[in-house]
Amino acid sequence: MLSVAVLAATVSGWVILTVYDHKIARASIALPHVDVSRPPAVPAGTENWLLVGSDVRTGSDAAKVGGARSDTMMIAHLSSDGTTQIVSIPRDLYLPIPAYTDGDGGTHRARRDRVNSAFNSGGPALLVATLEQLTGVRIDHYAEIDFGGFQQMTTAIGGVDVCLTASPYVETVTLDNGRRVHATNLNDPSSGFVGQEGNNHLVGAQALAFVRQRHGFLDGDLSRIHRQQAFLAAVFRKVSSGDVLLRPAKLVAFLGAVTRSTVLDDATDPADLRRLAGRLRGMDSGAVTFATIPVTGQVAHPAFYFLYDPDAVRAFFARTMGDDDGPSVAASAGADPLASPGTAPTPGASSAVTAPVTAPTATV
Image (cartoon, rainbow, N blue to C red; front, side, top):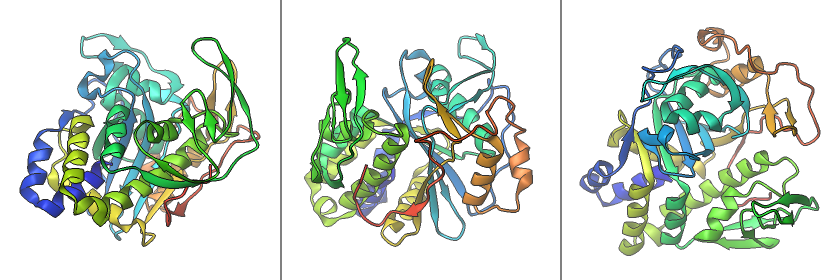
C-alpha cells in the first residue's frame, strides 16, 4: 500500500512526494538492545524490505502499546535483475525470539513464541532481529501500516473487486462474548466478513474484514496470506489506474490515509520508496512473485502454532533471494536450536508456494 502511494505521488511530482514523506512517522530498526548480530549486508543492487500490517500504529512505541500485533508480515526482496520476490511469514510461526533490553532498561531473556509476539513486546527492532535470525538475510528497510488506516485507504480509492469460490469447510468458533458461531470462507462472524461466490466488491470495513479473516479456512493463516497477496495486487492495479491517478480527490484522500497510517524506518528516504514502487509496477508482467515460507506442520493445543525446519527455511530464502550457492549466508546468523526440525507434516499444513500474480482474484 505504501509503495502504491509513492507511485501515485510521483505522478504529481517529486516535491509532493517529499512533502508526504516528511509527514510519515519513523522508527529505528537498529539493534543496540538486542543480543544478536545481524546477517551481512546484501550485495550491491539488491535490498530487502519488511512490510508489516499492524493492529495499532505503534512505530518506536510498539513495546509500550499493550496488544499491538503484527498480523501481516512480508519480506520483499528487490533483486539486481529487476525482479521482486515477496515472501509472507505466518503470524503463528513458532520460533526463537532473541534476548533484548527494552527502552526502560528492563532485560528480557530469549524465549520461543509466535513471531508476532516479538513485535508486541519489542517493536520493529525486535521483530527485524527475530526475522533476520530466522531467514539469515539482512533487512534494509521497514514499512508498517496499521489496519485502521487500511480501511480508510480502500474507501478512498472506491474499493477493489475479488473473485471467490465457496469452500465446504466449516469451523466452529467461540467469540469473545462466549457465543459459539460457525465460520466459512464466505461468512466469518469473528472478522465480520460476509461475501458471496463469484465477484465481490470490497471497500472500507468489508475490505478490512476480508484481509483479516482467520477462521473458516482449513489451513487457517496460510489461506489468509493468499488472500492478502491477491488483495495487495488488486489494490496496486486500482491505484495505478487512471481511475485514481487522474482523479485528484481520490488521489489526495488516498495519500492522506497512507501518511496518517504509516511508519518507516529512520533510514528510508523518498528514493528508496520510489525504487520499491517502481518494482511493484511489474506485477502484471510477472516480475513480482509471491510465496509463503515452508512449514512442516502445526500444533493446535494448548495454543496454535506453525512449526518449521530451520535448515529448510534458510535454504528456501537462499533460493528465493537468488543465492543457491550461499551457505555462508545461512550460517552467518547461526543455527536455530529452538525450532522444530523434522516434524512430520500434518493435514492442512502447507509447503512454499510461489507464483506470479497475474489477476486481482482470490479463490480462498
